[in-house]
Image (cartoon, rainbow, N blue to C red; front, side, top):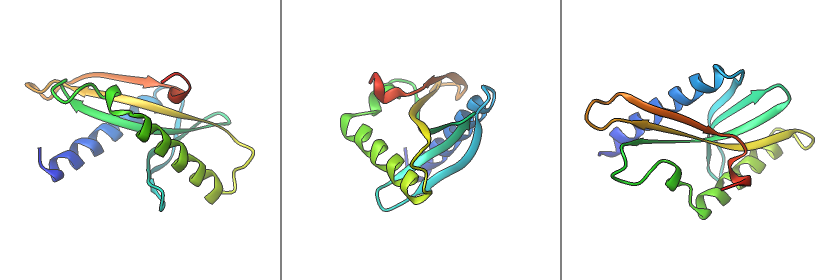
Length: 125
C-alpha cells in the first residue's frame, strides 16, 4: 500500500475510533496532536479522565494484528508523548490513561470487521 493509502486508511481508522469512543461517553479533545517527541492520534476525555489513544488500523492479518503493532518501543513513545502533552498543557494533576483502539477491515470487502478499545492498555500490555 502506498504512503498516501496508509495515511488515508489511518485517518479513516481514527475517525472510526473517535466515533466508537464518543458512543461510549468520551469527548474528543484533539486529534493528531504533535510535538518534538511524536504524535498522539486522539486525546479523548471521559469525565475527569484524559485518554491518550493510539489507533491501529489493519486490513486483515497479513501484516499481523493491529494489537501486535504496539511494540515495547512504540509503548514507550506513547508514554513519552502523553507526558509531553501534559507538560505542554500544564496538566500535572490530571487522571489519564493511555489507550489503544484496534480497527480491522476485511481486505476483500473493505467492510469494518471490528473495533476493540483497550483502556489503560499499557498497564496490561
